[in-house]
Image (cartoon, rainbow, N blue to C red; front, side):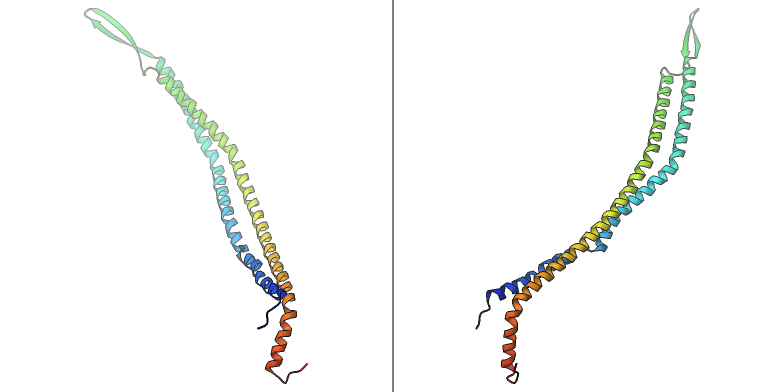
Length: 203
């Protein structure tokens, strides 16, 4: 049995190794998978932006309501402070000696508590104003995120397409080189075998 030369074995190994780039190209995610991956993130950003826009449409009503509550609490605290300062006499008799005690209509400190509640509602109005300023910036950030994700999706899909093309070219190059090593050795042997199998064949 004749042994094949080393160049033939090298060619066979190169042909076998040409399958590696093809396997790599086959294992890379396709454009559909990339679109689904980035699409989920984009959908989340878009839905969040829509919710923020809905809050923007409602924040004015919330702010007006908070301002109304604050105004009402201010009036209530002023009324409580006034009532707290009003006192009425309580007269008691100790045998024939009268005793007069002035009492307040409200418990002590009620006006201060009402004033603290009014301050808290004012802080709530300030927080609503701050949120009203922050919402457009948040929505703008979400829109920018959606745009960036769309660009990354396109660039990633293009990069993977070029990667598959490159792996295909590498496989073809390796395969052609391996074929170049094998054919000069393999073709004469095939021809000799055909000549032996069909004695009538001649050059």
